[in-house]
Each structure stands twice: as structure tokens, then as C-alpha cells.
Figure 1 (cartoon, rainbow, N blue to C red):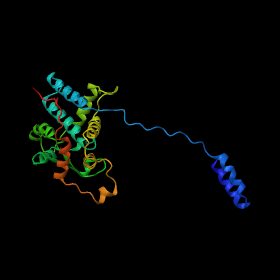
Figure 2: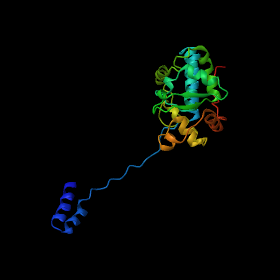
Figure 3: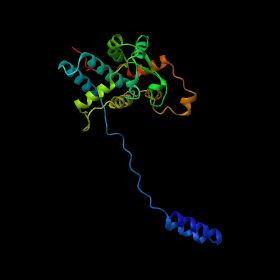
Figure 4: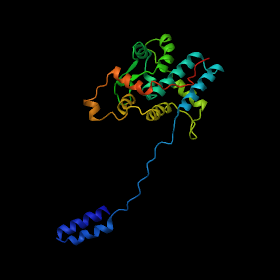
Length: 239
């Protein structure tokens, strides 16, 4: 059809007769219906995260995991849920030393380096008080150059547990922590600029490259304005 259209256009020029182009009407390609776009059907709620934390606690009480794994998995879930960092690209690469430096500050902010981010954007990541409390034992017990979280071990363990999500016939996966942070952020009406910066979502524009320059203290203050009153009521703590 494209060839026929071009040929008719050619004939109209060589014969100085525009009637050839009138046949274009019969050569138009049929237009297909555009697929309707839907929002994600994967909904991750506070109850889902608390179910994972409860499962971790039960596994420790039953002797399925040791205390080190219990503390590590619990801290990983809280950190992922409160910050929405990517599991493999970021969470798995963070070191104990980075957290040790962050929790020593009056306003705890983690400095995430370019090599720890999918789009190689260095950014500050505030630590919620529940996260600070959860990582404190790990910071004291491990060397500064060690990975902070047992990400691969946690992923294998979680795959075996098959913790169901409240909505839909899905099982909880590590990436759901990021989804929770994003979706809960909408419920809390989290400042869009602050959210995009911390999650490194949609930050490739000119304004982010040449104009915006967030500093640690303001990033923390804005984050806590929205997340400060939010807490997991069932945080997997041992009684």
C-alpha cells in the first residue's frame, strides 16, 4: 500500500494530474483500536508488609532462621517499605559503613552512591525512626565493609514462604516493598518532588540535571512531614 501511494503521487507529478492522488482514499491502512491502559492490579498494603514481618518473627520463634537472619530480614523489610529503594540495584549493595554514618547523624540520612543506583544517581535517603531502631543491632555487630542486608538469602527464604497478598492471588516478592512505598506515599499525599528524588523516579529531566540540588536536612524534614506519624503496628519485634 505504501508503494501504491508513492506511485500514485509520482504519476500525479509526471502527468501533472492531481486526480491520481484522489485514489489515496482507498489505500489508507485500517486503524486498530488502542489498548486501554490500566493501573497496576498489584496492590500492596500496610497489612501485607506486617504479614511479612510477622512471618519472619514466627520463623525465628520456630527455629527456622537464626537470630542474625531474623534481625537482618526484619531490618531489610522495614528499610525497603519506608524508602522504596530497588532490591538488587540498591538494597543488596549498601554497606554497614554507610548505615553507621547515617544513624550517627541527628537527622539520619543515607548517602546512596551512583554505583548503588539503577540510573546512577547519587541521592540522599532519609531513615525513618523504625528503620533506625531496626538497623541499630546490625550496625554494632558487623564490619563497615560488609553488605548491610542479606538480600539474596531473604529472597530465597521469601520465595519458600509464599506470603499471600491481601488483594489478588499474588505472593509477596521483594519488589513489593518498593510498590508499597509508592502506593502508601500516594495515600499520605507525599510531596511529589521529594518522593521522585528518594525513589529516583522521573528524575532525568533538565530541571533535575541542572537546577535541583537537594540537601540532606531538607530532604529528611520533608520526608518526615509525611511519613513521621506512620508506623507499622506489627513490626515483627520479639516480645
